Image 1 (cartoon, helix red, strand yellow):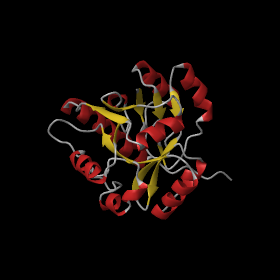
Image 2: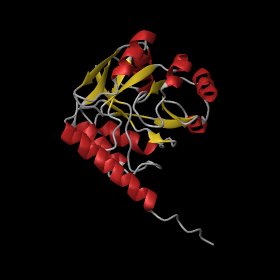
Image 3: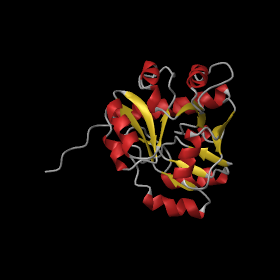
Length: 231
């Protein structure tokens, strides 16, 4: 069984302000015993070639991915070509799925944020191969419960993801996948249901620190002046 993280952001992200590099994340994941890692920047697919060898030297399969905004909602597209950056509608997602092999995951589908899928998940149920169990929860507040029910009703596997923006989010929730050590095999295994969720809630102190840091960084980014055009 491979220990896998399929939803993580780094300082290469064009939207969120992340305090560590892709190399730092690879090092941290390797130290925590992960076997495979996908970096899923917002609306940009990282060129994974420069990092694949570095990751392999540390025992990690480095997977390509993107957290794409589709009709205003977030969708995880994993192990697809760079064409995934051009997806704008759910019809485009369906076309991508027909033309290329990969994995489509519903991230934080019922979390109370504007980019969550909510009703779009049922409307486009056939597009999704798996549903995310997101690490950002506590024993007394857990927005994953509705996702678990939905996945059971629709026969979809659950995958554990950190949705990592801070290192504290890495390692408490992840997937164990019965697959060979390559991205295509991992994606096929998850789609076939050969995956087990491993999760434990964050303490309130850890959750508040992580969310507070993310919110402060977002506000700082919003206050930054627009770059001047060079003439």
